[in-house]
Image 1 (tube, one colour):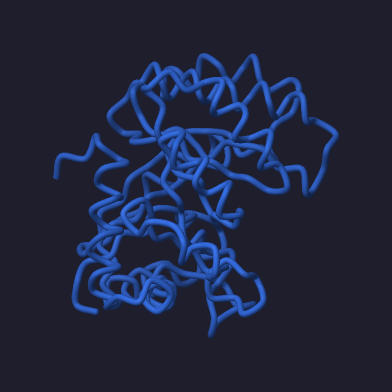
Image 2 (cartoon, rainbow, N blue to C red):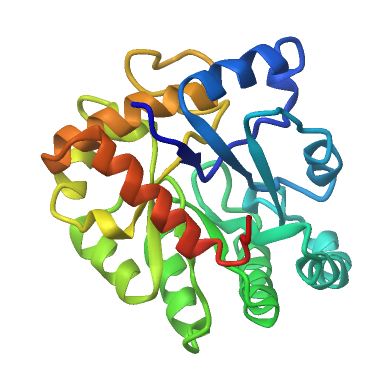
Length: 260
């Protein structure tokens, strides 16, 4: 693939890349990746994001608190910071936020409060919201439906829902983030994705997590997005170049503050 590829969800700023960041970015550029969008895990993430540079890649930052980072004492403190950050041109989206019932259900009410806050911030700033969802699909989509006033848009990151859930997400003005799980043989995501429209999908890695086949189990990195693109092309029965063209265009639509 000679086209430019957009990685819409990559934690390239994490310590996992500390020892070979420049080499990993060289590989990404060599694979055609020219844009990397970096979701926040917490407010400390943004400092590291500012250090990301490569001559062949544009980097875009987000602000937000991952649901697994949410604690009761953080909610009130986070509100002013989120509104302040989201109003800055430096941040092109709000997230990642959402719900995660896999690791713990101790702070479910706090996760919901945080998620609702992120939705309000995204609407006020007129920026997309990036959604993390693990074992919480019904609650997540219900909250989006309650928050949707026509101005909320975003991405269901690491989509692995059913066809019905995917179509409901599309109706709620969400795009579907397609990552390495698509390539996992027994995940079943490929069958679901094949019945949903390519023009509402974006590519992502979630690096350093969820490396696609044939690198499953290894540290993920942006250059591996080519394997997901190739698999999506097979699933959608179209050329890889078409997948790259459409998903990159979709990314531009989602992150509508991009002007470069």
